[in-house]
Length: 637
Image (cartoon, rainbow, N blue to C red; front, side, top):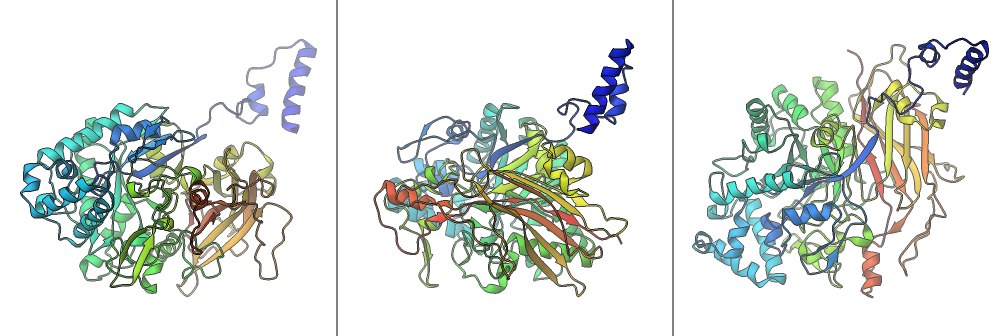
């Protein structure tokens, strides 16, 4: 304020003296910044929300289970149009997505179309004929056949006749049409349709899937076909995927990224601390560098569970057990054991990454956070009051919540529809809503995930004063005095502790905020990894107890409606926080977790709308959240 007043005094004095103001006088006073705070901004001003993982009827496990919506239907829906669901119900989003990634499975691409129509080559195969007949019956028969198809593919026992390869008309035509559909609906600065696919690697049922996204348009993407996992054209080893990605960039001049997802269904394999494709051998430096280069992001949550952390990893974190799926691998062929858990959840994975950094000088798990739905209905519905399920059998009905989804009687494992979660979006701080703008933000990890609501979050690390949070132009301060989420802190010359500027604004049509936490992980002097959760700012006049824990914010949920009120919590929260335990010699990471006040879960809406009584173990209330990409600190050598 004094600076602006001083500038005004110069102008008034010049006018009073009848002299012209030198053209650079204002610039001198404003220290090189334009008077307009909106001019000459070289940093991202807008956050864009989208889905990075969704399937149409062209994916075999979607189309086989009854999904009929095709890519163009999905893009119309994502852009905000009303469509008719796979079960004949009208459905519409409350607001459109800014960007969208249709990620069809690579292996057998195009085969489901031929299975459903009973193509001669399919009917000549025993598996193909049986699947055709089951899918034609629909209902539970189609559901069970879809589960069987997934299981056979997971175990490597699916008929070769159903594993369409590049070069076959069904495969090549499907890929061309997917690329063309994305191009038709891509409208720069309005709606971005990113060309992508899902590399569907499975090792005896352990999930190793990656979504591969292109920065490019058809002119480059159509020079290749997706990399498969089945021979002769593919491999389940991610090293081979990274080679394909390198070859794509070398050949076309394009740019690609891979996003691992569902580590919670990999039985510890996706982020194992050693090479499971080479009998548990230690990773060599080539592997570490390649993984760090190609895989900069992790899908931290989706409809098949949340992968931030787990009570076994974070026993003192009261918010660790959130939408947890921890019973088996993807096809429920092998039960999960406690020793697998640290390599399946983001917090444990990040700690492994900085351990690698401390010991070998390379962090292969330096991962930002994105959200994906993995929805197989063609309908990404992320609001609890508008959830159309993960599969067609899970579209709204009075039976979906309590129906058995999948199980293994030999292992005594069974789970139900209610255990699927509403998925959340990826939020991207980008300079523009284009393929290049969205991709570049992802590549630099300036992204975050929420579990559904469109919470706005800024997170910077650097050197900040407590009063910095009082400004409304926090982005200018954040970028000028620090680095954003996804970045690396510069080691302070004097060993001073870094400070963090964090701010969150609630979803305009959502619930108030409970608190913001900063999670720190580090490698101690003995080489062991540690973690701590800090409540840094919160709503209300609560005070931490003797145990250091902040009391709950309260609960206004009325399950009879169901609804909630924003009488508790706050619309926005922000603060500057300095790490009280900082050690300049320790490797560390920091990320922010933003919690909403409690709200009704999708099961609560089903209970009221269908007038049904849920079982006692069905979760009816949720506490949605957002996870920012981390900021890393690496000591100087």
